[in-house]
Structures are given as structure tokens and as C-alpha cells.
Amino acid sequence: MAEIVLGIGTSHGPMLTTPWEQWDQRVNFDKRFTQHAFKDGTYNFDQLVKLRADKHFETEITREKWKSRYEECQSAISRLADVWARVKPDAAVIIGNDQMELFTDAAIPAFSVYWGETIENRMGAEEEAGNRAPGVAVAQAGRIPPEGATYPGFPALGRRIIEDLTDAGYDVASLKRYRPGRGAIPHAYGFVYRKIMRDQAVPSVPVVINTFYPPNTPKVRRCWDFGRTILKTVQAWPEKMRVALIGSGGLTHFVIDEEVDRVVLDAIRSGNAAGLEALGEPIFREGTSEVKNWVALMGAMSDLKWKAEIEAYVPCYRSLAGTGNAMAFVHWHA
Image (cartoon, rainbow, N blue to C red):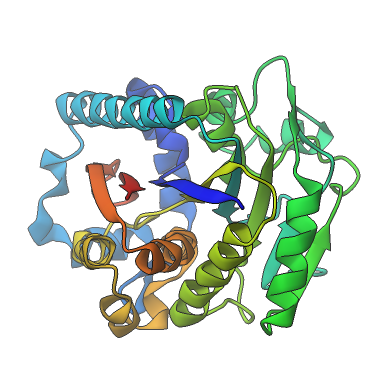
């Protein structure tokens, strides 16, 4: 029987793979975007600056702060990668999300499982076009190797996960290849292969939750139970192997909200979803919605009753409006 040997939660935001001296590249996008989600409202950049003036974010966006927070994040990523190398799992299930990388608005499933023989991670026509977005090209090498890569999939386990999730009442999309023009697995997964596995990828199953795009975004409790079902499937896998469960995304962004992040960290420590549900679904919009990838992992870890080790929580602010990405790095062990 398969054995779960490790749980990892990691942020994957572009600021992690952008030199700190260039964190301001994305601020131009922040200023143009008019639908920033914060609390239960939606604001443009100037409105956020006025609304949050009492936070004095000018003290958070100095070059000294950028450098120290970048270095703190890199150190935490390195520690997670060391944990991975020490435990040496044979396989992994990676829970992440898609941002119009695998899907388009023509069809966006609530849940999907990729069960192809291989996982391509290389620059394609679509990735080249996307590099024109502010702050994207500079971060790309942290998710896609410059020379490209082909990683091993785990189609047999992927199929079993699809079957068991379907039996449990989840309508799951079955994925075996990318759409034409797409050369890379979404960045939620590419970051894990490059930075946590250090380009030494084991056979894996990418699981996709639609956190970003209403109206079919699963609620917190649904994601929690989704992760518990995946745990049961992996534990029942008949082959003897050591498997890691990984959640990729979060925490609050594109507007950082440390109050929300504290609730998430408390839930990680307690193994209880009540605080997350109490936040209300409107909190989980835009980048903050990626917390739900962690929620699925947290559901699995709660069943195992494992202890969480929080390597770091680092709010990486980049503007006077409090935009940026709150980063977190956690592993669970027996």
C-alpha cells in the first residue's frame, strides 16, 4: 500500500522568482487594474491607497525591506527543498490552480486531474506571447527551465483519483494533454518542479481547482473534503510507494491582507476549517482564492493529524496600495 510521507504548502508568486530590485515591474499593472479585491469590496489602485493610508505602506516598500523579504523567502524555499530531498518521496500529488493556462473561458471545470504519461514544461507560442505582460518575463525561468523539461506523469494513479473523486460525487475533468500552442504546465506546478524538487521531478499527478473564475468556484468546505478524498485514494493505492501531497498558491494577493493570512495560519496549526469558512466566500477572490489549494491539502493533513511546521510567513508588499503577495512556506510531518 502507498504511504503518505510528506505534506508541503508553498506560495508560487512571480515575486519569488523576480530579483527584488525589479519588484516594482508589476506595480504598473497594479495601477492600471481597476478591480482589486479587498475584504468584501472591489477597488482601483488610488482608492486602495486612500483606504489603507493608515497602514503606512511607504515603510514596507523600501529597498531594504524588499531585499530582506526576498532573502527570507529564498531561505524558506531552500529549507522546503531540503525537506523534500531528505524525505525523498517516490511520487507526488500537486494541488494547484489554472489561470487561463490549460483552459479558456470557453470551458473551465471546477475540478480537473491531469493523467498524461508526461508533463511538458517548456516555452511554447502561448508562453512567448504571455511574456509581454509586465513582470512576467523576468519571473519565467523560476517556473520553466530555459532549456525546457519533460517530467514523468503518473497516469495510473491519476486515473484512479479521477474515478474515486467521481464516485464520491465530484464532477472531474479528465486531462491528458495541453491545448494547441501551450508548452508548459501552469506556473502553480512549474514552480514546485523547479524550486521544491530542484528539477528532479518524481512521477506526479497535477490536480487543478478552479479557484479564480466564478461562477463554479468550489467553496472552502468542498475543497477541504476534496483533499480528504484524494488522501483516501492515495492511501488505498496497492503499490508500495512513498507519496507527498503538495498545495501550491496563496496567501493573500494581489492585495495583501495580514488579518486574513493570520486566520489561514491558525487553520494550518489547528487542522480546523471553521475559521476559514467564517471568513466568507467573498474573501477568496483573485489571487487570494489560491488559498483553497492549501485548504484541500489541509483537509488531508487534518485526517492524518500531522503537525504543521511553518517555515516562514512573509508579506511582500510592492506598492503604497498594499499590493503584492503574502508568501508562506509550510510542511507537515507525522
